[in-house]
Image (cartoon, rainbow, N blue to C red; front, side, top):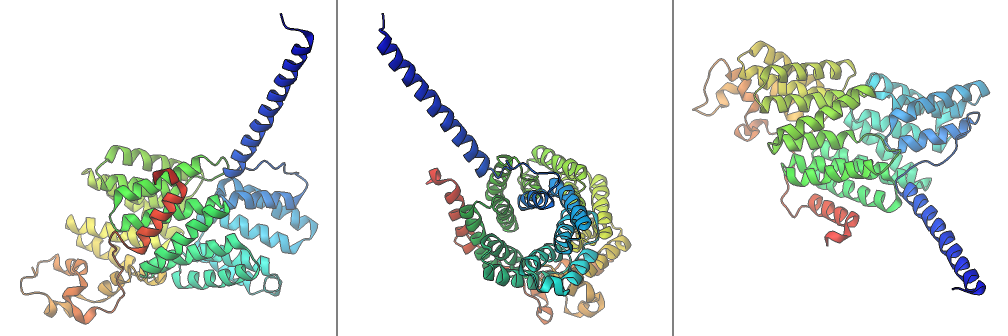
Length: 439
């Protein structure tokens, strides 16, 4: 039988252990929430600055669905208080959060007009906010303009010592470098932005640049590696309570699975993405997912369904001026119609794709514009002797390698990489940084 003194000692030890366990549990809980980018702040409903900060929190985690109503509420409260500066800040945030439900061209014009005002020019932080918003918008409609936006944002962020915005600007410039055909620079900038995001705890940027690197692997047709990166991006997003749905990762995953012949998994992935995009009214991602579903339908032999999905995507892209999506989708449709012998429809879709490409200024696809502005009659004398001059030849020459026509090699073609490319090395370094146990 234990003495009273020993019982008191045991009670003391048990109490210490329990207190230590509670403290450890709370610490682990808070650390997990912090690492996952979860907001634990209480937002006072009568404090517009607190509401604005919470909206920014969700926006940085690519969760436009939750950020948009907070921006709208903050904007209204700032307007009632006569705070013009923060009213504009909240308005820009709200417009960006709902960008996919409006014309990107009109949104870019509006932000550009605000950038020219003295209030924005004389407020460096507000100017940075507008530049980044315009850069994210212009990437869909005017690549050269987006480059100017992000170059200015990078310089300003460095001056303001806004490290996360500076890193994000470099990452976006990497995406632009890829779109303009400089894949070496793209790999360096995007890979560096990913490492910076991981180091600084910028979970939203980490997910975005994982998605972009996955897309880089897909361009090289290295689908297994792309799938690995996309799955990791989805895993990071799922571990973050406040993060938005990782649309690009799901879209890329669906495309990679389609290329690998895993059609059931691909359809399940893309269907989940499409349903989420429709529920959150993300029309851009809705159109992109429909394009990938169309390609999947083609692969499984359902040509009619593929046309329906791609035509629906084209209608959405055309309505909201998504030139990047419109160009890709219309070119795919043109190829389908050509194979069906519907040459009038094919020519119409190719002409529209050319117009979208010219508006976008995308050098990776500008060769399409050159091909569609050159007539068949101009090129006919330069065709190889064995070229079939059939009724379909008027369309077929657009798909011939430009190498057959040296006179028209006036465009910068995208670069393909081997396994020792800078892009590959940066992806591997980033992956090992996230998963050191793989060493």
